[in-house]
Length: 389
Image (cartoon, rainbow, N blue to C red):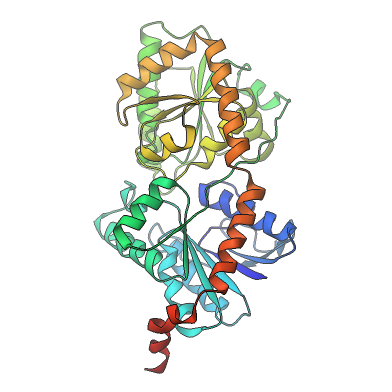
């Protein structure tokens, strides 16, 4: 089957849950023998790179501004895809999926699938006009493609209730490789099992400020063991002012370390040797970073939003979203209970192995493609009518 992915910045993934999702899915589908193409942006993926682990790459330009980068690139990718012989075009995220209507109108034999990753209009980086656009984009994502995939039970319940349509649940996944080296840790003065880890983009709705406030308070009250650190992995996405705010919050606390965006071996090293993982987000679809942390055997402490509860089940601890004081109490309790942390980490690892294997996710996604290909042609009639006008 010939399949194209549209909406992501590119692969190999440097940052971003959608990019990691597309990379893993595309590579696994290619390994199963399918012809996979991923559209990339030159600011993210080297435009001279034409293939990655069996996946074809097509680089197209974009208008590199906060509001036009994804939209402009997705439009060009869709225009290009209309003249190819793909069996399935798969859009990722609600913003890019607004263009899914074009192949539905102009390419009757090409099936369209979209993945609803998260309700992006809740993200604080967007202004009121962008949020209105994303709400419209959500409606298109959930009604126009032959099949729409959701990545969590939480999103499935929401979408089916709002749009009165069946959605296909295919979660995110986690491939884990333990990294025994500690070279990167040594550069930052980190010791195995002596640091708390958080991995995300530095965007306000990810809630890193709550984590810093909680850690600061524990340090001020001498409830943190000597030389025990907080490591924050990530970079801003058109949110430099938020990164500055976080560093102002951390001033005077040398045990809070910002290591920037990390990938590959260094990120694996950070996951492999952390004590526990904290996810303080105000909103998520289904966090890949959280699943990867659990896959590495890290006990998770997470905000009690539905997607986080779904991900960790009974393998970690919750605190009320946006409540730094409650997060502080959870950290204080578990920092001095390594046996409990190890037991919960093992349970988290087993949960990822049982429920979030990328091989199984790739096979389930391919089943969705087959369902779209064999879907009754009458489902396309409202869109076919546009072609006759």
